[in-house]
Amino acid sequence: MLWLNLLMIVLVIVGLLIFAYGIFKASDVQVFFGELIVFTPIFWLTFDFNLLPLAPVFSLSVMYFLQSINSKKQVENNS
Image (cartoon, rainbow, N blue to C red; front, side, top):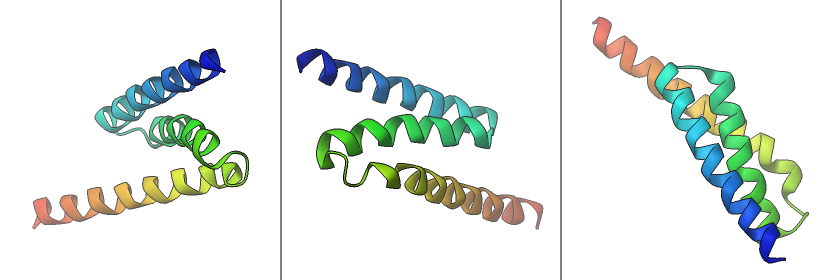
């Protein structure tokens, strides 16, 4: 069980790195997969398998939220 928990922590760290790289490069796909890799171990370790199918939904919602923030910033910069 210890190895599984350590693997999940490594997945979260890798997911955060992919998420940050996706934001830096403005790549929606990398942001989505980074969030998915972060949310999946968190949901698995905290809620067991009950909420695991909702990890992609949360990833998409965060990605759309980030897109709306970026579009508002671009509109403010252009005007």
